Image 1 (cartoon, one colour):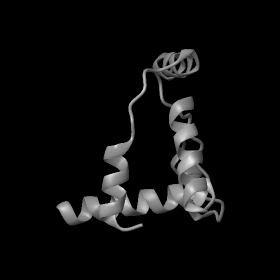
Image 2 (cartoon, one colour; image 1 turned 180 degrees about the vertical axis):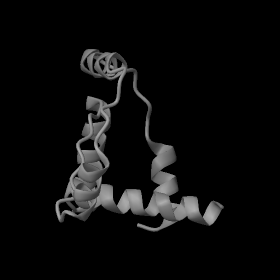
Image 3 (spheres, rainbow, N blue to C red; image 1 turned 60 degrees about the horizontal axis):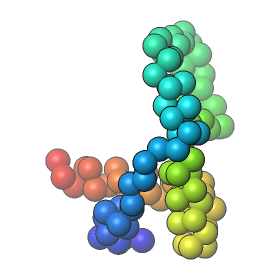
Length: 96
């Protein structure tokens, strides 16, 4: 997928009203007032580790859209997200 195709698909995404699950997740996020503080040594150890995992809480509607889009592309959701993030970063760098 090239940058233009990415932009076209991004603009075509339909925004839906949040359902009850989405509202619950948003309330949980808003309730987390303090971000955890990690010691520098722990952060550096995580950066050096081979396991580069990240956990995201996604609204159900966004998750469903990502699953469908990845399936339509014939790739895993992980591959699709990596491509999408990389493409977005490249577009951002070109805009500077």
